[in-house]
Image: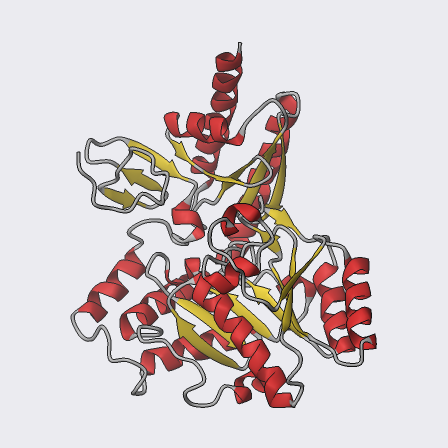
Length: 401
């Protein structure tokens, strides 16, 4: 079959006709428990009634008008987000890469607005992934993403993952230079593409204090771990901190493309008319989808249920690992879970075996299988996942012998 689609994806020969809750169904009626969620996008699963009704109603009214005019739905969602995050202003775009790139632009612009025009460098963690634009490729240190796309833009440096001492040393060096260059530090509380790897406990609180001490900004990349996936609406909530800039996307509208950048008033003040923009960002259709998702997530007891079920799943995964001679080590937060496979297991083999058993998962770096189920996954479906994982490990064992 001649396929006109560009071959930049290593696609699996599997297509779906429709979805129901946590399940994807092919045209032939084969059912798969979706623990990939479109890579952390389908927050409420598939065909959630509140999301379907919101989009259906708005589709018959107004889709797009551009940001030349006021968009009341955008104003409403912005107010919801800044209130929930403890921030001041919101900007809307269409994707995670746009959100992180916008966050970098805003950090540099804020420093320019302060009069510190030499401060433009963004410090990122080793192993980070912030998107696939040219600038965001420079924000990652992983050669696999950069190969053939050079030269990389200047203005990005990397520090060892979770290493506060190295980070402090770099900031001290920058301050003592007499002409500081560091504008911001950008981190994921849990590195998604990096293998569901969480920062050490307390790291974000220390990082907030460090940024305050040296006068740089803190950017929280919530693109994958945000919108409830950590078990909290924002992953930085348990540390009780307030970033200067928050980038978010993926699950914000449950599958409809939308991204957002939330900022402090200081950062927002630097963004004057014409300084940044997005043609499609924050259009009415995207906004009603985001409003519907946020409405469900902020419902009575919803996030507590996410924490309860994700804690239960993590406990089951630790038990399975122990029963299977520690074939993997579970890590992550909430429903962003990584199974770091021990040798000789290969994550790709486990992902394939899970898929053959009717469960979809996602590979990640460091030989990791990612589990990213909808936040609406039930306890009964978690049991199905656990049993499928046991069988998948047995299948992989059998294939090796």
